[in-house]
Length: 162
Ligand code: RP5
Image 1 (cartoon, rainbow, N blue to C red):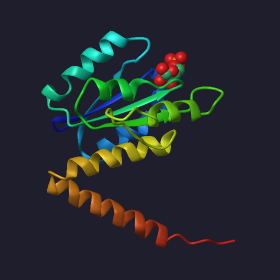
Image 2: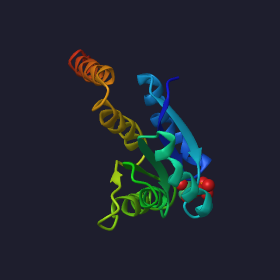
Image 3: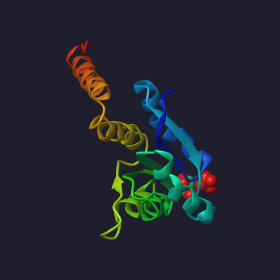
Image 4: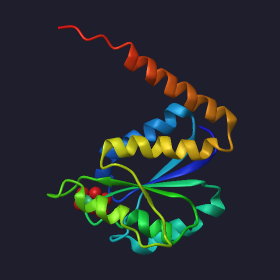
């Protein structure tokens, strides 16, 4: 795989069943990533240390998936200047509402771009990050155009038979 440009963080190994769609999308597009389990609440010191080093290591975008009182994306955004995308995960009796509000409702000054709850958000977080990277990578931009066209054709070719 190519040079690591993206960091995919998650608050628990249990988030991988959702976040795997993010990893798979980068694989599909041949973009290098690393995946890391770190928790804003359970490993606060290590999370900050990791976030602070991301930019100097050449990482361009960070994606954070977390459930419950999801502070991971906000914490990483506070300790890094990189674009941070948050994926709220359904991990409690509130079915992701708690994580969505924790992720999306950042105080002005520390931006986090929140995606949809769950697998839709995990997939779109990767596609959004790819669009950011494609601003400086024409080959990747071409791949995204081809992907969109393929998606369009799949919808138009769909036959409904009863
Ligand atoms: C969050 O708490 C994690 O992101 C996870 O979604 C949720 C529950 O974690 P586990 O108890 O399943 O490890 O920090």
